[in-house]
Length: 88
Image 1 (cartoon, one colour):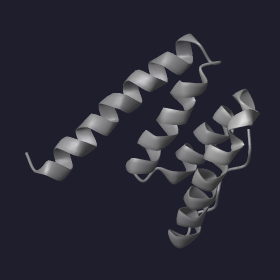
Image 2 (image 1 turned 90 degrees about the vertical axis):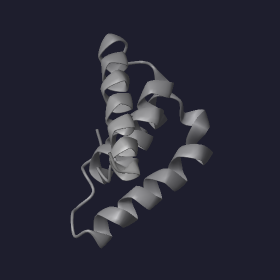
Image 3 (image 1 turned 45 degrees about the vertical axis):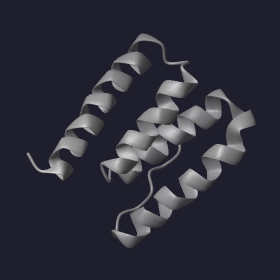
Image 4 (image 1 turned 60 degrees about the vertical axis):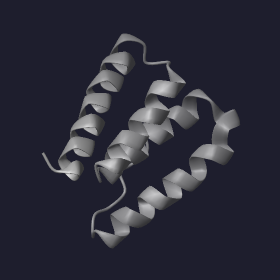
């Protein structure tokens, strides 16, 4: 396997585990935050935005960490010609 494929597979595995975690406990800030990173790495920017917005809702005190990530993901949606999702 190429290195890129291995990395993609790891992000997809992480995404599956983090999705299970959010289904078991929707209040897990860390799972939403990290799931946003996995989506971002997989270039699923709209999904990353939704995950990071959920994390921000769960813990507004972490806005300084989350808002720059949201801005970057939104910028990528514009570059790709897609629209950022509506907030939850």
